[in-house]
Length: 215
Image (cartoon, rainbow, N blue to C red; front, side, top):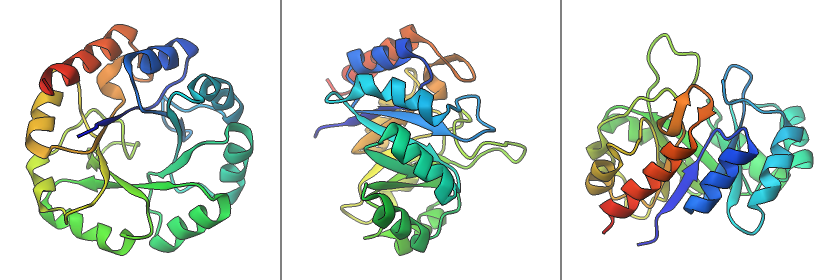
């Protein structure tokens, strides 16, 4: 089975190049002021240019209004939007219709019951992303370097397409793949030397760990 790999929270040309050279299928750019990975739409436009024809560029937002999404869409022209806030099914449908791009809807997970929330989004969102629930004092909905019990995902309905996210790194990605067997994975803090600072060596190491786990 082909495995999609998204490197998220990219901010520099060097990090984008490292992700692409390593074989990333998706590169993610975050538009959320509280995040150390936040970029402006114009910055993301310059960065995503390198990915054209090589990987899908994903714009990650958190309860963004139409004005911000319009700016991102015009400047960056993402291949997909990732909605990482409390967006309703109706809002997901609105974003899809307004921008005519696929939408990835993120959910925080810690227990099997949390998966029930996706029901209203099935057939609306094009794909899901399952991240760990943030710590109580966290200001970020994702990118906190926290993992969850991957066996929870065994309760997903057949055919649900998703990214596994949350605390992945070179040391644990093999176990995550073994337990959850996801169709796609997403990593951000797990390839950083400091919050928001991508480590080119860690990106390479992560991909090597994935390759080793998949034989």
